[in-house]
Length: 255
Ligand SMILES: C[S@@+](CC[C@H](N)C(=O)[O-])C[C@H]1O[C@@H](n2cnc3c(N)ncnc32)[C@H](O)[C@@H]1O
Image 1 (cartoon, rainbow, N blue to C red):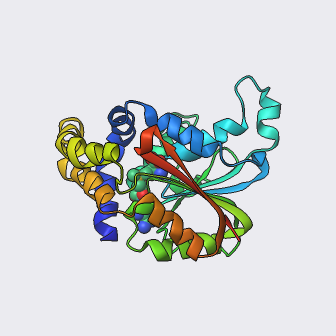
Image 2 (cartoon, helix red, strand yellow):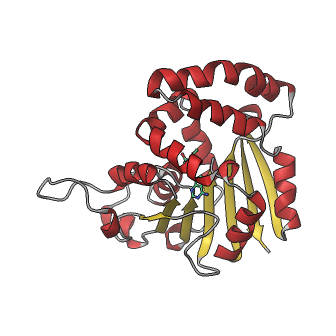
């Protein structure tokens, strides 16, 4: 399943951001801002954006640390240590376009193996279920719309717990199985009719967008997801619905 998902994201990577904003009528930006705002602590934090894709979640968080209008020196003084990790090379290549300007000779973007922290986030190709970082490496792990794709949510949570320092925060932004009248209407009625068609129309990838809807309907409810973290020993697990529960933020602190 992992390889199929990886290939699917490679296939939609170039149109991914556009369709994200289009299908959510731009609301995904506000949801990311709200989720990123849950992480306090400033620029010195070590933050991993897991299943980070094209890097929008990390970028949103980073932008909140360097407010507009800050003097350049101020903005770079406490540069956040960021890593965007994903197993789709196609998605990471799109992230690279956002964070790294072409090399001065204008011969294209820096090679992936030179994309290291300093000028922007490090981009790391990695399976979330087999992370290449040591225990307790991060103050915070972010994951937007990635957990739903993992082969095993339990193993995913175990790895996240391993990567976090004690007291570190995990922030999920996700679509969950609908449980209210409104979200059932949205995900069981409206979405299956419209989203695969729009995905086909704009990216010729009907299957990928049909998967998007199916994976939401087959995923855990937000209550079940919250309980997984409690059972794994996380504390202060809280759930914040966005736009009547179309999307949810779940924050949890490693105990
Ligand atoms: C829906 S996209 C979300 C991307 C990004 N976080 C965002 O907010 O737009 C899901 C991402 O998870 C990645 N992904 C899914 N399963 C993964 C796994 N096992 N390991 C690493 N990345 C994975 C996909 O390649 C894809 O880029």
